Length: 156
Image (cartoon, rainbow, N blue to C red; front, side):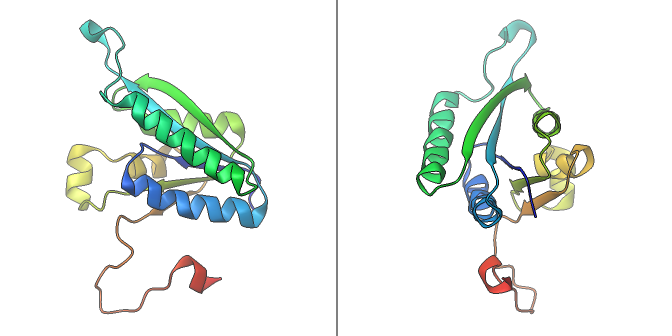
């Protein structure tokens, strides 16, 4: 079904949860999986320094995850794209467009709509700027709504 899948990651636990979905979809469809991390840079007087102090650790973690996917036979690679702070969604969307991806998988933080609006949400912004469908994996798979939810494995 898919020819190329982007996994948008910031190295967080929520991104890791999305990675499980992206990995399974790539394996099932035997298609490339590209981990995309937007290295957000502070501009102006900061002179282009990374927004995150632990950026090197985050990138090393993503590289390990990509290597694990390769070890399982998935055609996986990482792309580290730089952009100005606050534009991670646009950076991911641009990479997806340039690679001709047909799906972006991203984790969510589980914030309310208002908090997402006020604080900004990469997943929410991707829904508006992405050149392809976006699969937004919720922060928690156990939301108590009084109904029964199925996991990805149960649906298949």
